[in-house]
Amino acid sequence: MSDLTTLLEVGGPVAALGGGAAYTRANHPGLYWSAVGGPISTFRLLSSYASVMEACGLTVAPSRLRILAVKATTRREVRPVPPRRGIIRPTATGLRLRLRLAPGQEPADVAASAERLRHAWGVHAVYVSTVKPGVVELRLVGFDVLRKVRMPRKVKVEGGFLKVPVALREDAMPFVRDYRAVPHQLTLGATLSGKSMYLRHLVAGLARQDVALVGIDCKRGVELAPFAPRLSALATDPDEAAELLPVLIKEMEDRYDLIKARQGIAPNLPDEEITSDIWGLPESERPVPIVLFVDEVAELFLTATRKDEERRDEMVTQLIRLAQLGRAAGIYLEVCGQRFGAELGKGATMLRAQLTGRVCHRVNDEASAKMALGDIAPEAALAACAIAPERPGLAVAGDTSGGWSRIRTPYLSLGDAADVCRETAHLVPELPALKPFRPDVPVRPVETSAPAVQPHPVTD
Image (tube, rainbow, N blue to C red; front, side, top):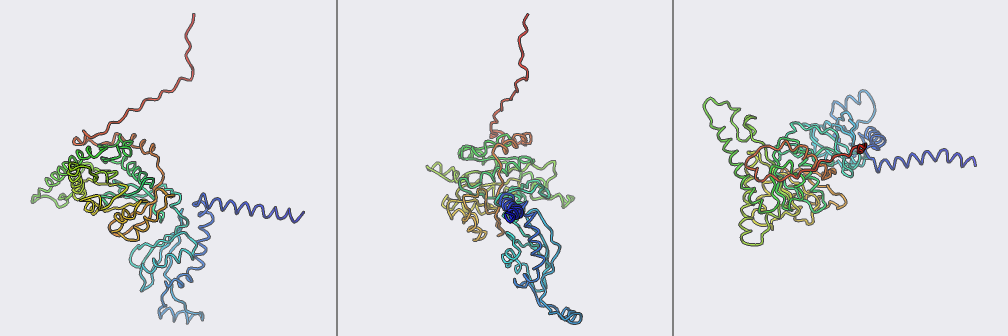
């Protein structure tokens, strides 16, 4: 009986502690990492750093001066020299440290050993980035941050105008949609893939800024109509889009005329006042930027009659012109769709070539993934094809420079995004050309609360 009591006294707390740790690791990985995983991985790194570097082939032969110094002071064996390690900095999702590479090494050597380092130090992933020549930074991620997305509380975005933190990257860094750096983007995703959630975050983030939002939603407006209070213009079918696009082209041409007027270069005009886009204009003369959201872009390409073909060719030509010339005029494109391929018709490939940014959610066919990411990197298209339906919001984001990463958008309800647009409706800029296309905003009935005390008639 005493043995059983001792077993219960000792085993009970141990079982409870183990069960609590397993529950915390499964449901609250960030808390588990801070309390258990982080200290364990830090101990592994400190205790095995030299041996792990040597096993990964990241060491170099010591210099002659080092050999002579070691032999003169001690009799121990002279071992290969690993990269010099900096201070380990813990984060909420992992560890960060910098390495000063030994002579003859390059960052690609460390990146090639990232998978070995991950297993050696017991972390979820290891990412390598170059800080400056001879110095790389290792970002160790302790758990799968894309399984349950939680954006950082404070996202430092320098010059936050036209920048929206819209998702979380697999290395635990925020994915920021920067329209100044990547003016136009193609976003693809099948039904229930999370494309609409990505679009909500973009609209909600831009709604708080001094930007004109224009929408073309060929699904009868079901995606963009809830954001009507903040939209400067909205087209809900191809016919309305055919009327809206020429107005945007005219607005772009007027802005170019404004820039050309500023370029009337006189002999005494300072160099800093010569500009080739709206951002070089004085703030008092600078027109407000315009972001055009095109949802279900394939609907603009589909035709049934010859008359539809003429309208299609005209709209596609106007979209291509906006993509080619719109950046300098402060007009940016966000082209979204479920399917995008060369078989859509003339102009599809040319339009894609102008869209620098690419975001591909789960798609129903491999051709769409290759259309979005194939010209960036073949492995990026393969990663997009491997997205499981159980992870909506997961996507592969890249640009035409060749870099890409996995991202996932956090949940944002349609009601919350619509509330943001309703609260920021006063920020809609005055653009007379777009006024005929301003969507009707339904007036919400004012809710009146019933009085706490019901009145009673006065009787004699």
